[in-house]
Structures are given as C-alpha cells and as structure tokens.
Length: 208
Image (cartoon, rainbow, N blue to C red; front, side):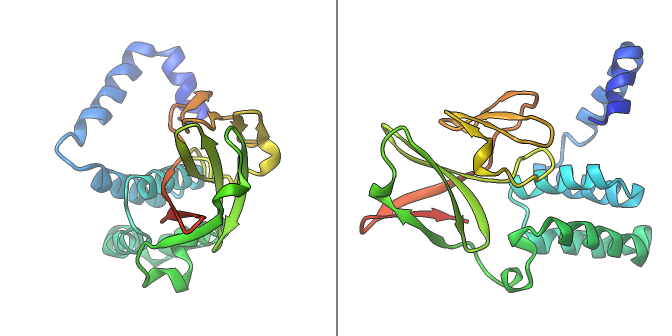
C-alpha cells in the first residue's frame, strides 16, 4: 500500500477495513491473472507509476505474459486513450524487463544454461546474469533453487552485494528474503519469483 493508504488504515481503521474488504471480495469470481490485468489498467488510468510497477510485477508473477499485458492496455483504449497507454509503455520500457523486449515478445518460455552445476558448493549462493536476466542461485542439501533477481515489490533489480549469508535485502525498500526458501521474512509478504531448474550434462538450467 501507499504511505497515504497506510496512514488512513491507522487513522480510520473501521472505515478503511470495510473498504479493503470490499476490494478483496469484489473480484472473487475472477482468476488471478484477470484481476491483475484489471489492476494494471486502473493504475494506468490514474497514472500512478508506483502502483503500475507493483501490479505489473504481480501480473507477471501470476503468469501473465508481456503480450497479454500489452493487449489488455490496447483493449482498454476507449477508456485510457493513447496518451496514457504511451505513458505506461514508457514506464515499462524504463524497467527494462526481459519479457517486454521486442525479441522476446514472439518467443516461448525456454531452458537457459546458467552455470556449471559443480561451480556452487552446498550452502552457497551466486547471482548469475543469463540472457538478459539476473538470477540468484542457491544450492541446498536437496538441490538447486533459482530466483528472479527482481524484487516482487517494485521490480528493483537486487544486486549481489545485497546478500548477507542467507538474507537477501532489496536496497530500495528493504524487503528481506530467505534465499534458501525465497520467502519474504521482513517488510513485505510476497516471495521471490522462483524458476524451475534442472541439471543436465553437468550444467544447471533454469526455465523462463
């Protein structure tokens, strides 16, 4: 939530409680992707950059593709108008999300070669840049875990220096994650975006 909403929740908890409950149940019959796309459109209509980043990231995390986001914006043209759609695309392009690069729009998810599997000892973590995407890789006793390096809060690309032991802290708003599980353990509640992994011919691969 924004600082203003947080303030109102504390200043008028009963009134705001009803409001937030209404928002929670208003889309109960919609699937998560549809709710996310509607939220993206509402943030574009209000031209709220912080909110757009937050809900765009949520949409991608819930399985929306870049093409679905773009189509949703274009379908909302009668309400948004071209100027607001262009504003939204400018915000998205500045985020430099791999999904929205022109060469990726026509592509399908695929396996990416991250590193040699034996390059990481059990208990160690590495940040790998692969095919335009940052990935944190943790090797636990039961295998590998890979996470998108972008914070699920506002898509900040978290650097390797933000890692202290098994705690990964986003430098922008200090959301902190347990790298062994991907769970958010401080400030926020949303986990890192996990990527499927496999080891093949001595190489670690991740799927996105």
